[in-house]
Image (cartoon, rainbow, N blue to C red; front, top):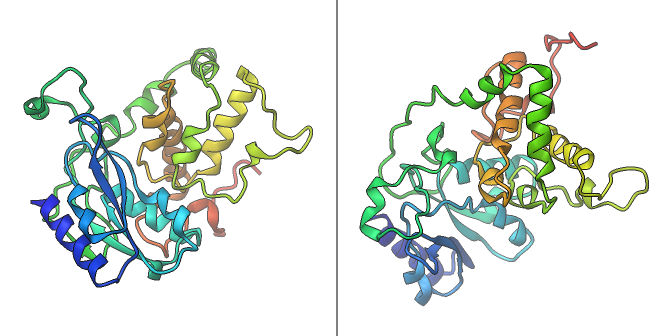
Length: 292
């Protein structure tokens, strides 16, 4: 059982002093909640769990400990591992400062208030897992469990293609309706492993630069700017869309950018390794220049 292996390896690492902290998941208030947990004592490893509700991508928490003494161990699913690579590629996290405990992931389930624990088999996968291209960790020190098969991802860009088929006015009306609901809480930015700037441009105080107003124009500016900022760096973990309190289709924007980059520069998936730089992070003489 993965949970037992998690507890054993975490206890061993903490007891031997090989790491100062283990980041994983524990059961939350309800049976369908599994939330991040930070273990620093070997006697607390019994809190660790792995089930169908360990949806959170844990990698972003590494930013809080990048200057801490010693190593941090972290459990990584496929998306978490790609996020760690993403952070290492941006030189936000050093490889020798983290101990990666890989967990193959068969997909997370939708939380289901009002149902019983025995009903988990009938629950649908969360949207972020339905077209996952990397269910297995792409980088790890120890792998817990057997690797799982990649599910059919042929519908990965279905939502994008549906929106592309709309007319110009229809597209503007659709996104105007979506962005008008944005409350500028920045939850999408805060949870994103590709958003790791020391100071976000939208937190700056420079006059006549970026507005703070919560209106359609400024909301459009924020969402489009953020999407382009992570262009070629989005690992499709879907955390931005998952945490959005207004249910904005943020992954449709991100996948549109991914689709366009793949068509312009060739197939590329962010976070698969540290060496392969993003398309917009390098220059090649054969790059398309139709816009010039």
